[in-house]
Image: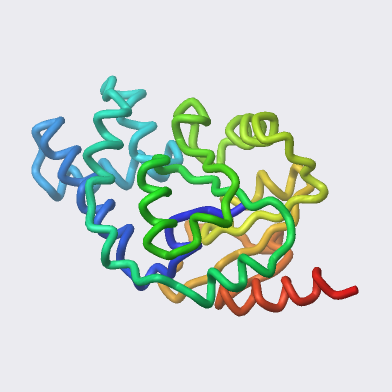
Length: 214
């Protein structure tokens, strides 16, 4: 199970920065706010609800599909293909799924740009989770049920440790994909993470060789 943004590509690619900017612009336009006030509300809802979208739905009745179409209208071409990651995924046994708080469209475009789309069986997006985002445990239960996942045989890769905690509680192995840009919330711990991958491609390469060994 792989998170998408800032996990399958590095945060330094600044792809998610485009989304972040468009979320702010959407809030400003929809709620008639200045950009500074929109940014403050965006981050407030993100910390309180898991996604800014969830807060906008609860407090302002925002139509989620309108939001998702707007914020994911970005330039995916900034992502170069990643042949090394493609090779590492090809060598890694097991079914591979994407679990994202974003949209399927955004995930598909990202995977295609990276050249790794052929390796993923399914994408579980925010619509599939009924707009309940990670790290809400209800979303993980929905994901597991839909894709018939045995948690004790599953591993989850994420750039946000807080999104790994519910997976660990269910019995999954947790791999924190750590970036220099990662910012933990006050009081957020990482002790529940079983592994840390500072370089996802290298980590997967090592894991693939280990798991494929006779």
